[in-house]
Image (cartoon, rainbow, N blue to C red; front, side, top):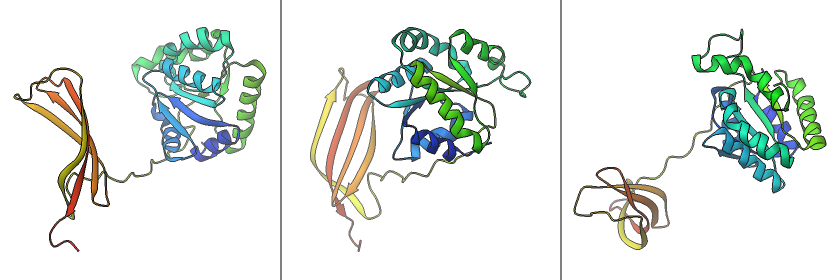
Length: 251
């Protein structure tokens, strides 16, 4: 088992600064690390094929990328890997978690079949692969082999990750958003605002206004929001800046 920081540091030294993919519990340490590291970018994708496409675009812009997903999503990535990366020679480092590994312990039933065929699928796709390193001493050499293959062939390289390969890494706590009113300040008059109507919405009917405060500082507060009708359909979006006055008795 390795620490997330060990792999991420070594990957960053080799130019990998963009991480994209679809969450898997095996990948949680890497996702948390990438979200916390200011020198790295993490782009969550709607599906595995989108993640491969994001990495392809990044490579064309000169950025090495890591694509992370579980093997159950490998099927979603087949089309871009075969129709985009292969013919146009666009490399990417894939980290594919091996859910449902035969003999690897109990897992969810939907992983059983894919677990049996994951290595063969990578072979069929012509993607060179090896197991994800589970020793700190093996991380550098594994990444060097991956980068060497990617540079020589301009094709993806996959690391197949087994359960327990990476130690947990906690996401650093984020500061809570300021409420619209605080013990020290209360909202005052609006300074400026804008409303974008996406479709007709009846303001004489029940309307849900969802406001998200972003910043209260130096006597001003800024927030954005949305307006939904009683059926939950988005009717309008807004942004507003208001004066915030100190409450009486506040030092």
